[in-house]
Length: 290
Length: 318
Image (tube, rainbow over all chains, first blue to last red; front, top):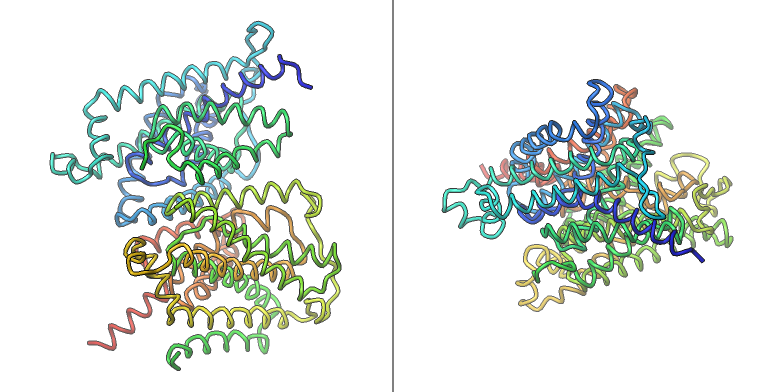
């Protein structure tokens, strides 16, 4: 059998991967909670962000951690524009249209990246990915530890934004009662776009944290998008704390599944959780009854 | 059914059936591939177009039909036509089971789309890992052209078989469209609660639709296996097929009999042309499909067939 130390290390590694997952899921859950749409382009946008991090490093010499702020701003603008000028107008206010439009977007983005960068797998290179910290008997990867800390910080900031600022209040108002919000002078189209922009900014931060230990290719987003959906469903659609906890749970399940069943079947665990939660508890573990 | 309903169907399928008289093998190959997608899209349309349940995982049904047809022949030595029929039945059963689990859990809209996607992914991972599917190396059907083997020496043979399937499904769809079941399905699509209040058994209606949808898309999968004689998990259960049948049905016209066929032909025609012009860009045809999907949702929500119909009606009532 596996020794306790190996299992403990797998759990801790899973928690750290889970934090990165949670960051990807935070953007998704926020967009779902406010716009009530499932953003299928989320994975493709994450891939875009990861290529942007790679480009910053290779063309401008800006490392992934220094790139967090500029990329977050850039992707906020990108997300705002996408929702305001593409997704919003072309869905005519129908949820299923939004689903199809974001699916179309994801196909476009993925194949545009494929055309531009071919299907080669790239990574940042350098020593950064192998940097480790000793913690008792465990060797932990430093970039993942940093990623974990920043993910928690971003979740806290997001919570503060939603709970304490005027924009946050407007977002919550639109999420709860769109027409009421409109009557009190809030422009829902603007708030939708702001929310989508924040979701994309979360992706940019996630990309900066992922890249030191992850590879990139034009399809890498697909690996994340179903995981992110699983987390969002597990945590309850629209719940920030749910996304955080869901991310950690999924990270641990994947890590233990990979250890016990092997890499390819380990993924199966995630999909099974996903299906089971959808079938038996579609409001998630922490979501309110719909 | 009136003659007016059948006329466009007869014209389109008749013209396609006559193409082997003059067309090159290249064109016939294109038509066979596009029409297999068209058949799959007809299956998707029954559930998504008439029933309003958007599935993002029809690969689960397509792949089951394809794998069952292929495995029964290669491993168990069953006659290819019998294998094809079993594939259709298994795909219908798969559809029914997915429907039973998700409709009973009251999954709708984006939740239903997500759960179907997950089912397809689970099947893809399993097929990629299991032994009897040939695993990652894939599955090869031996090339032995004869009618009994469901393989044809000339391209025309396969084209006619695919067209016969499309004809059968189109007539079935037309019959559903005009009949009681179609009315129930549309009622469920438009307003589930109102349909229930009128005495429609919502769950049974949806289950019948997804099982039929599974049979049709499974047939497309079986035809795919017989046409290309090779399968692996990424082909049979890959996301590409879920996406292509969905786009074909939407572009052609949701909830119309001929929409999926028109959509698949138009889409693949455009795809081939762009690949010819910009072949050095990998994935340029798929990129265009994405643009077409968004444009269709934004500007032509009724699809090509729906837009034509509206044009004709406008001309009829000046």
